Length: 247
Image 1 (cartoon, rainbow, N blue to C red):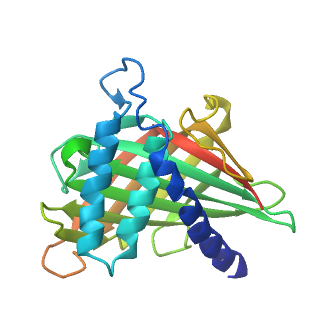
Image 2: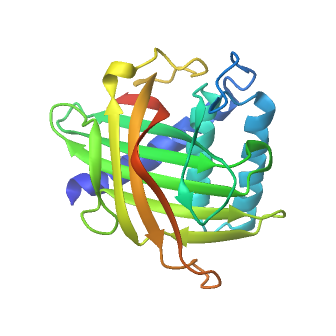
């Protein structure tokens, strides 16, 4: 319980510190990429940023939207690509692109832990659907590279679905059941994050995350919309920003 409380508190501090990344690397359009992998342009990052900010402003009592915005913009502005992944879902029929953040904490006083955030979105220029997947794992001498478990069971994972309408209206689901698995592949790191602005005690590298999930929400938070689900039945590879913290 103490480790989980400390993890959550440190996570919130880290999110605040990383907000400055949103201004970095936004002009890098990158090379020509396969159709299932995209490097967002500065305009696309700004459009995604603006759309979610409108939703955040219209829903000030929903802190999950702000965390979702921070996570997505941090990774994309740092130059991490997004990858199209086929998802079995009734949230949308549009293609969904995924990007991840793996935060690995090493604590000088002893102990370590890792958190994972994976964000999926549809058209970044006119975003209307987003999925937020999260994971946590305590470590020992070194931060762990994997976490797997059930939603609402052992506390490893959580997930949320969002529909963003023009003008800031949001339909919001909290996932109540299912499983998630996050496995960071340290052998596939691609060097430093191209748009990362150095900050003390943090390094940024690009890695591959092997992701699996099968999650369901019983109904929207306001009770107006019924159950929704999202599933990736086999482990897929997600481009991920790995942030190593030395605390």
